[in-house]
Amino acid sequence: PDRRPAGRTCRRAAVAALDRSPRAIIELAQLRSTEISSPFPQLSKRELDILELVARGLDNQAIARQLVLTSKTVRNHVSNVLAKLNAGDRSQAIVLARRRGFGEPD
Figure 1 (cartoon, helix red, strand yellow):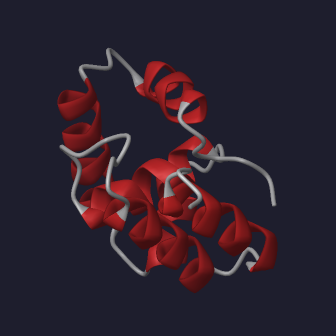
Figure 2: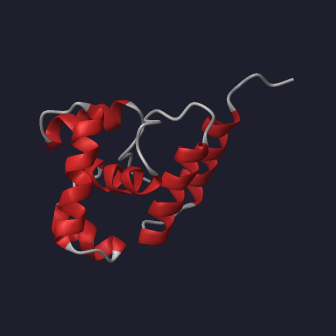
């Protein structure tokens, strides 16, 4: 039997099939959150959505538009993500996220 983690294989297939729509990004983040060994188990599904978009280089206003949230809500989520990742700033969070496969171009 194949011993590779099923989540990684499924995620790669999902990434290959997804477009850049907000719904697709959310579904990808949700897929990541359901994997057996999530790279960031301390983050909620919404925080994973936010981290994905931050890792793609979007600013808070762009994230708010894509997820249909207020800028303040996004700012609060970003602050929570930074705290949970022990990241000193946004760029440090981006480095951590990209090392774990977030923010990858389709």
